[in-house]
Image 1 (cartoon, rainbow, N blue to C red):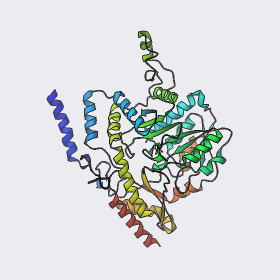
Image 2: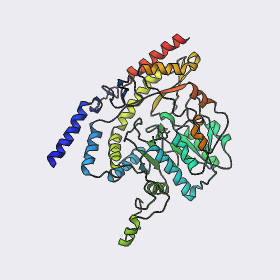
Image 3: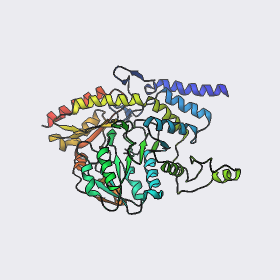
Image 4: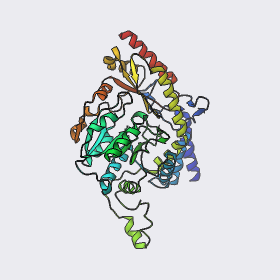
Length: 441
Ligand SMILES: Cc1ncc(COP(=O)(O)O)c(C=O)c1O
């Protein structure tokens, strides 16, 4: 049996060796970038290698080994590895509690569920929450699922984040909170937004799914609201297959979300030992349901992957920032485009570009040319979210005019970032755009 196990492990490792993406990345300390070829994972479309894929795997032997080792233990459902990752994550990002779930969307859902169920937050049906018009579908949907009304405001034309100047006029007697979404790695204007929250007694909630590792002042994003969500899906800064995290300094939110992610039971309470002292209480407490919960648990493979990724996260972050330096040098101050402006310490999820001048009306043509060259592009997150037909199912209102998000929707696109050195890819992107600009003008 032992021999059999070893041969299975060797087979997996041999398989790993054959694939470029699985080679231990060499880290060049001098330029702080992972060097070598890019990942084969996600690097192909229709059998053709992509010159500049949207996202790339940040796994190497460590992650594959971690998966294999965990498989060998036989413990795959949520357990001590998830707990260890939660503790390490909380410590790394300087927050009291971290609660892992199976996605960033689940993190958003459980935050809203906990705020609504915890009476002290006084979130009632019909209450309003102010949100930016650029975000992700599952940033918004949980609020209406729990009976709150979304009030959309425009984004800032430079940062693409919620515009603090637009918030004040959106506040009504029913407003209970503001959802801050740090877009594409870029921290929102927390000082201004927190001032508005304090003056008007509003709760601040953070969706940090795109911005792990970003900093506002000396604090990581995810530390400014009552609770924050994070995502570890493939294209994100940390990749655990699927996965997400809730962070909070409020023990009640921690307790509620721990219960809500697992059927609404008490078994995962931080205090479980205190009310399970007698054998009969312990018996009862093993199946004791107190909240209208779900099953949104991660598993142990997500946990070990998180631990492994967190170790290399500082390097991943440095490499992404180095690519951003190249991006800014190439595209800032160009006549034919503008780029997302980051006034704080962005963690650069991706690179977004708004076309200007004659190129503005030629986005489809440009995207097509880029795609022909193997450069993958996407709209900038949801674009103007209000244009998505899911809004027919949502309870919402628009405050003011959504001019900036509409411009971004019409003229913008984004390309990916990763921990690989993207200089060659970004230079090519610039060359193509220059050429097209000359041709069109
Ligand atoms: C801003 C934002 N919130 C939430 C999510 C959802 O995260 P997940 O894909 O892990 O469910 C995403 C996904 O990319 C996102 O961009």
